[in-house]
Length: 528
Image: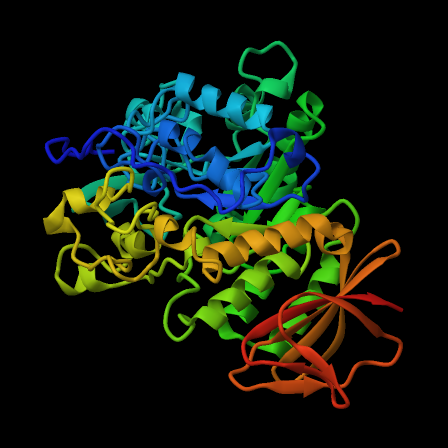
């Protein structure tokens, strides 16, 4: 990655981190809490040295904050060196981008997390390399290179690479630089052996056979059976991923692999053929985005047909590739609280995207293409989805990692989050009614109630904008009523259910049944 200009350094000291309204839970409690992921775009999270780039030391300084939010597991976007601001395409798989820190910083983070009973997952996109990677530089026009089998070429002279990604190898990317992306030959046994060893090095950094000091799992970005659907690299789930994951599990049977299924479907093939442990609940995300109760009910029922024993999915309402949930028309306090409840109460494993808990906004823009600076498919369009986490109100204050503001000529879209919008940890911590404290409340409720923590999910009733689900773990049961509509509505209490104590929310019981305010979620303890 082109190294960012350092002349615009901010004060080196971090801003004081606002803590949770209640003290962060002791480290010994984390392992007993239900799993809750927190997805971090590293460059945007927390800056420790004043260069505006989020880094590993900044992240380490925020672990109390994350535990106070109920987080047990962090998922980091890629760390390896790259010319791309998001680091998804590697110049070198083995290193760490020096703007994030050093390997010593990384292993200190892992140690801190494990001492707290927390886990860490790394995001990996190993299907491609940049034009700066040794495999391409050594093999291009040189079929005698030992790296010749590592990159896909059309011809025996290694002159013309196979362009599987969007049909090209040349990209104009932020900040207005020309870069190349080449496809790795995943059908080559040497490549699979390399990546098996590479991932094991993160799992067992000192190579002593004990993975307790390594990472706990991986997210595989852009996972496909037929890479980019061009018929060049096919049957990857059974021929590449499944054998490699089997090797990883021999080192650590507890390692977890998350597939970002590239088709954004239900993920069944990734479990059955790719032997992954988790997928992303894209159908729930789609229903939540549209505030569609019927679609949410269908997504839950569909999930129950796919997510069987020993399988899991991450329930989310936003991530680094999607529009922020807090965008218009969803940017109202009630809808944002409803989004929090969908994330944490629907079931399976919830995953928060950094800044979701304070209501950060952002949507993809084509402003760059309109100004003639970058093509429409450039990565600059996604910067609004990945802006600096707001520790304090001023987006440019020390500690807020506003890396994109260092190149004004290459950043044309105004920040989605600005002073005065109360979208910061500092402004929301002391406000009991804030979105941040709603997330903290729901995380505490989920940890306290076994049915909400680890229970199954069943659709009890759905009518209009109302959805009633039951969460159950052994004898523990809870009913969750969502009203995804803009008007109050009532739902007859289904036969065979009795309402107990109300655990969260403001819906009530009347002769009509259950009366739910607009855009609300309510939880009751219940008995059959």
